[in-house]
Figure 1 (tube, helix red, strand yellow):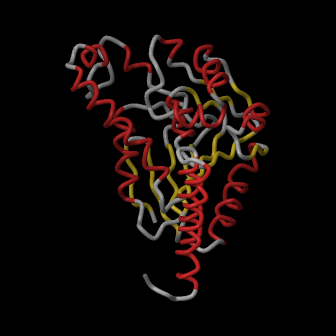
Figure 2 (tube, rainbow, N blue to C red; figure 1 turned 60 degrees about the vertical axis):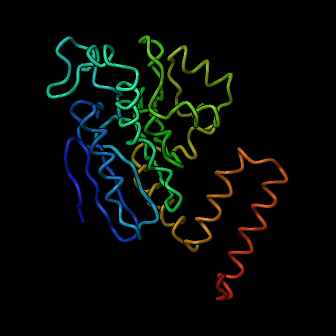
Figure 3 (cartoon, rainbow, N blue to C red; figure 1 turned 120 degrees about the vertical axis):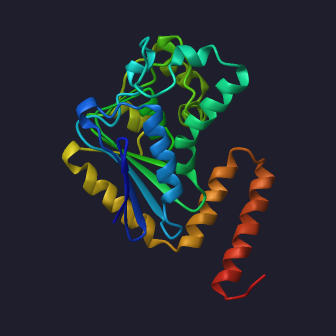
Length: 259
């Protein structure tokens, strides 16, 4: 069932799996404020009983990044020109970027597991969108690159935090500042890709992973995700306490004992 189809974004739901598809292959799924608004809207429309969200893209490239028209004097038709944004107040710029970031934050919702199916180029905003998900399954032709710094900007669409978590500070800095491509073998070796498969097998691999994720009881998945997500900010002893508390809830739930 299709719930949304606008501005290069389609949301469809099949049982417990919601699929968000980037639908502008002719322009390599370039991104714009309109697309970000549509992604934000899609996130708000994902049903509460969905358990897995798949992010995929039509065509040969996952996303070639920001539409370069945004930097042209005339900007993107109907959108705020980036030069005009630069002349706005600090608060206005902050609020505008915060609104853009909403398209990238909901993928790690506590009750969902999100999977990005990434093929071809995932550049700049495209790289950050893939990083926004919990898990990435990549085709063997994938090419990640963070080009913002090369353009005189910084990655500001939520990508810096997961990139440092995955690669560590030194490698994340090198990848961002050089703007170089990270290909499939390196992506898999460094953890940017959970799995790399031949391009023709990408959809099947994602479907198999989604099925495996759905095999475990929902509440156990939610508790496990919360434990792992919080581990990076807790001390060792705090993590042990969190494990005990989560297991207590699970045991009581399985035994049918309420709070």
